[in-house]
Length: 268
Image (cartoon, rainbow, N blue to C red; front, side, top):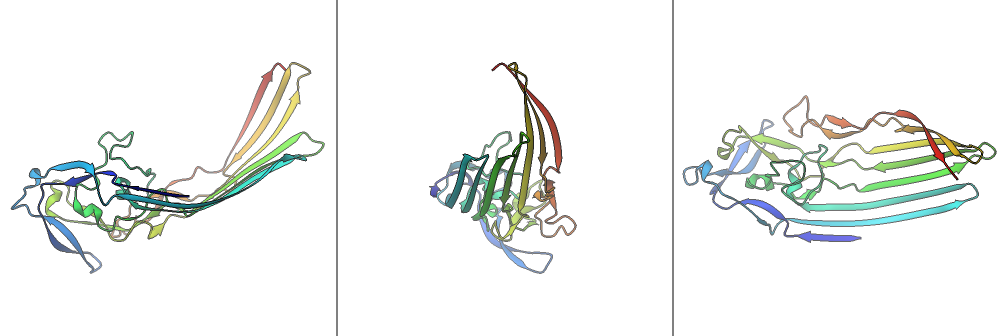
């Protein structure tokens, strides 16, 4: 599968005059930046236009392989593997590796203030790369087995995902930040780093009993995240110069848990 998209909606500053400049990072590196020339354009004189952006694009390439064994002889199974690449530049390119969705709009729900990525030209530095939903490897397998002479049905569902892409950033002082002391600038393209991969195994054991023509009752035991995978789904910060919190995982997967339930069906 292949999908291409371009000319997505985004912000741009149509009034601000910027000059090329540099900033010194704490590790001694010098990075290029665009500083607002406040002598020509005061901060409050900037004007932001929402329009189709020539440099905004999306490219998806994916290969899906599926195998299925239909229900027979007391068991069934299904499996799939997806190898893919999602690359480009969109309003979502300014997010870090938090639990943020990949969007192509500046007003994704439920955020009322919308996305301001692109209003400052420094947002676009190193921003083209892997998009937030890029998961190069996805594997799924599920199946069920009728245990002979017991009435028990055992089922399992396993999923493996590559971790979300992210990149290191830095906060640098610029004239246009106004009340905000610093501007976030990406130091590397998104996808240079990744969160840990996720492995999720859910299992179920069930047993149904007939109620002599009145219906039947089914007892179910579900064990979710049976492997108790503790992979993070976000990080505290991608600021390279926050040594205690840089790249530290957060928004973890739900821990292993078990649920016992009863289902009652009346009638034939």
